[in-house]
Amino acid sequence: MFQKILIANRGEIALRVLRACKELGIQTVVVHSTADADAMHVRLADESVCIGPPPSRDSYLNIHQIVAACEITGADAVHPGYGFLSENAKFADILAAHNITFIGPTGDHIRVMGDKIEAKRTAKRLGIPVVPGSDGAVTEEKEAKRVAAEIGYPVIIKASAGGGGRGMKVALTEADLEVALQTARTEAGAAFGDDAVYIEKYLQKPRHIEVQVFGDGFGRGVHFGERDCSLQRRHQKVWEEANSPALNAEERSRIGGICAKAIADLGYSGAGTIEFLYENGEFYFIEMNTRLQVEHPVTEAITGIDLVHEQIRVASGGGLSVKQEDIKFNGHAIECRINAEDPRTFTPSPGTISHFHTPGGLGIRVDSGVYSGYKIPPYYDSLIGKLIVHGRNRVECMMRLRRALDEFVVDGIKTTLPLFRDLVGNADIANGDYDIHWLEKYLAKGE
Image (cartoon, rainbow, N blue to C red; front, side, top):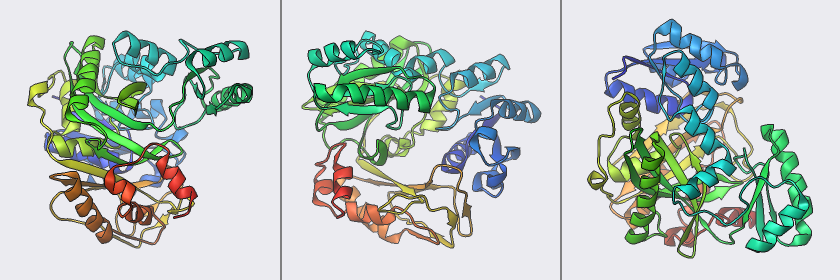
């Protein structure tokens, strides 16, 4: 087991990893920018190192500063959390070159899954169902028209190196294709420095289903069930639940088994999430995230397994602590991402939190690094906390969520709490009847 882990992140995820380390008796080091000097994870860590000014590029994305912090403090491993350098293959390679363990997959696996075209090819080779589309990058309009005609309109054009909805355009007809192709390539080049794009069939009313997987790096793989992340705004997840209200036990077992086998065959090490669009009983691979997900707590709630403990165990060479038959699903869990944003316009709302009170009681968990008097800096992601609620079934979970949202108080800034209070009372949400377009349509109506 590791003696000292450096946590290369900030906010609630840094605090989440820190807590897991303390439970395992591992010393912690956190890095921080000057803007985060008063952050909760900095206060609670055994050691802290300031690595630069507020801009991420000068601090949390500064690989050389983070490696130097490891060497200064004697950290023998780095947990990257999510975002920032968590899916940076170069970072993983540099740590390995310095004999520091990256708590995550190999740089090679990060590269493969970070390239959306290569990821799709790999998924197909591993037996994972994929969305019909081009075999690789599409550069010419003539080729794009041929592919689109084969798979049928509408189609979606995606950036190969993309994420977060950037470099992504829909063409409903052939007449739309030329502009969509040019626009997607321009956006991809500007956002990612790579204008490669590919084409897929555009599904009309799919759900976003993701499967939590783990590999030990030696040919063993397991899955921890699925999460439904269909409530999204601008391709960003807002509300996640496990298990999905759209799947039955047979479908859950089938897609989970496919994913666990694929991870084992790949020789993958650590946590990963294989993401799908799901429509009319069929799953279609869209990407794999080679890190811990923001929404991992809902999986922990229904399995009773600490996924960060599992990450650390696997990275230290201890292998997986469970076999597939040991993993049981208990009840239902929902996570709401509480952001420092206007609940209608979603404009960021940095500032000082004058009062912060979290809900409590059976089945309630709040992952947050903020506190009363904390000043939210304007430089980073607007997530300030996650409310996770667990119940014996979805009905009980929704009732408990309604009560927890009523108890949650964040004064001094605007937050998305009012949005969730609206959603929990909506009939479609109560019935689990929604797809990836539902939330944006709901917001557009101004309900």
